[in-house]
Image 1 (cartoon, rainbow, N blue to C red):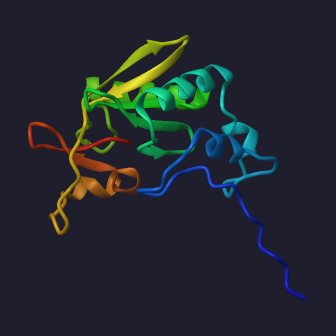
Image 2 (image 1 turned 180 degrees about the vertical axis):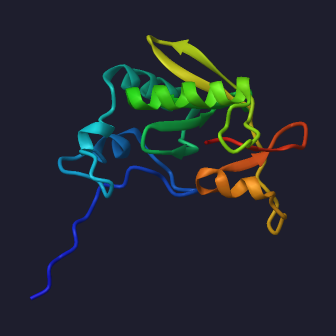
Length: 163
């Protein structure tokens, strides 16, 4: 007799995957994730839901979705990170602190970013980055960045957009 492996709701997006608000909301279920955290830990905060609805209407598809944040591109080309959870707010605040104080634990340069209040919630605005050309040699610090989330800023510098 074989035991079926448990299936988990997908809490992140793959590059190029189109995410709708309905898909995002349906990904939260009962049970625990692969780290043992309850799925309720990822439950979208009602304040975030209002902001997400606005962002979907205004800017269209999600650029990327993580466990606690969703990223959009605004009309100026900036990245808008909308925390889905209170943990996501903390993560955005930490990214801004690391950029402002150059406090990344491994000395990784961070993309320019700032926190803004928006519709009773907190969002993070980050400079738009260009993709890294295929085959580009990466510095050793790139291995310290979660899933190599790095890009090239408007000054031509290689920076991280997640810690």
